Length: 312
Ligand code: GDP
Image (cartoon, rainbow, N blue to C red; front, side, top):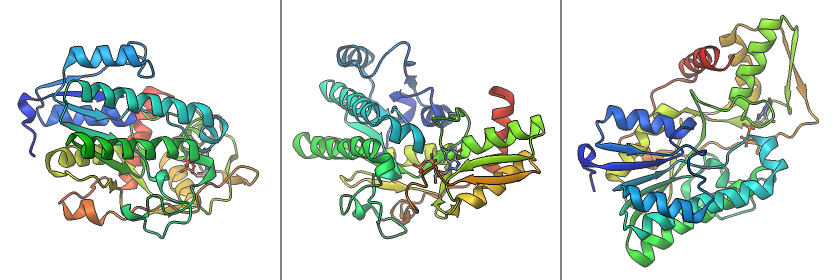
C-alpha cells in the first residue's frame, strides 16, 4: 500500500487551515511530488459543481480531506444547522469528486466527538454508535459519523482503499483564536495574553474546569496521516491521540504560566462543560509504530510564539 510520494499528486482539502497546513508541511518535508489545494475564497467546497470541476481537472492521485466547518463548544451548539449541513456537503462533494476520477487512496479526518457521551474511557474505536452523543457537538459529530460510513460504503461497494482517522482535540499554528468560535486552548492563549498585556487582574473562562481533555499538536497528527496513508487499509476508523488528558482547570493554569499571566482565574459556570471526558484509546495506531512527540508544554510555547507573531 506504500504511496510513491515523490511521484504523487496530493490534494489537501483545507490546506490553509490548522490541520491542512500541518499536513502540507509534512508532505513537503517528505518530498511529495505535487500538492494541490484551494482556499475557500477560490473554491467553496459546499458547491457541488465547482468542487467536482476543480478536482476532476486537478486529477490528484491521493486525497486528504482536512476541510470542515469547525468550532468550539459555543459555535457548535449555537449553529447546529451549519455544522451539520456544511460538513455533510463538504465531505460528500469531495468524496464524490474523488470517486468520479477513480482516486484509490483517500483519508478522511473526523474528531473524537463522534463517540458516545458515556463511552468507556479511554475510548476505543469500537465504541462508535454504541450510545447517545454529547448534545453540545451533536451536529458536527453526526456529519463526521456519516463521513466514516460514506468511506466504508465506498470500500464495500467499489473496493476503494479509502480510510478515516479520528484525531483528539488538536492545536498548533493557524488555529482559530476568535473567542466566540474557537476551541478552549487557543481561547486560553488569547484570554491570558490579552489580560497580561492590559494588566487585568482576573481572566474569566467557561464552565467548571472539571471536564478532562486530551490535546495533540497538529504536526504530530500530520505525521500520523502520512503513516496511515502508507500502511493502514481498513474500514474501521482509527484514533489519533496523545494518550493522556488533563482537567480544563489544569490546562488553564498551564497556559497562564506559559503566557506569563500572574492574576487569578475565574470560572463562569453558566457556560456549558460539554463532554465530561474524551480520552482516546490509541493502542491501534501505536501498534502500527506511530507515537506523538510534541509535549503539551512545548507545543503550547511554540503555539503562543506563533500567536504573538501572527495574530496578537
Ligand atoms: P469541546 O471539547 O467540544 O467541549 O470544545 P471546547 O474546546 O470549545 O471546550 C472544551 C472545554 O473547555 C469545555 O468544558 C468548555 O466549557 C471549556 N472552556 C473554558 N473556557 C473556554 C473558552 O474560553 N472557550 C472555549 N471554547 N471553551 C472553554
